[in-house]
Image 1: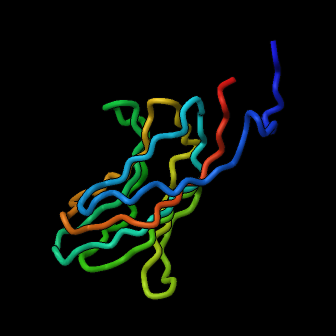
Image 2 (image 1 turned 90 degrees about the vertical axis):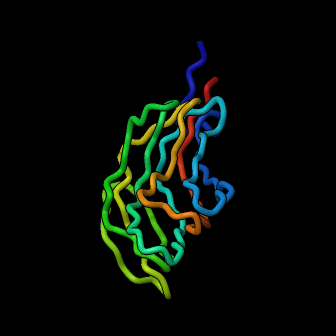
Image 3 (image 1 turned 90 degrees about the horizontal axis):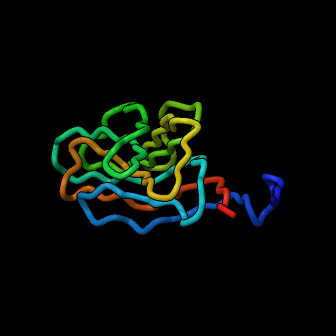
Length: 146
């Protein structure tokens, strides 16, 4: 039986992925690397809304197939015609202005551990056909199955 130290880089690593932007009007979905279990450390993206007036509520959900097993809190509504940077991380909530757009800080359910077959998705209530999610960054710790 081989025992590995958890910080052995052949087994454990800290990584960041920048998934492709989904098409306009779509939520994004991310699948962890194959043969790994991941602890999600943070998620960040920009949501630019079109001119339709519907209020959007932005959350993250973790799913195993069709079953949602973790869902973030809905912090605040996102109005039309606005670009907002959304950051999900453990133990923080709030909003501030950075540059020319608003920055929403939301609580990431923690610990959020994903394995093969799970997905991490945005779940945006009232998403509109012209809304765009861009600049997606997902930081995580991964354990390789050996």
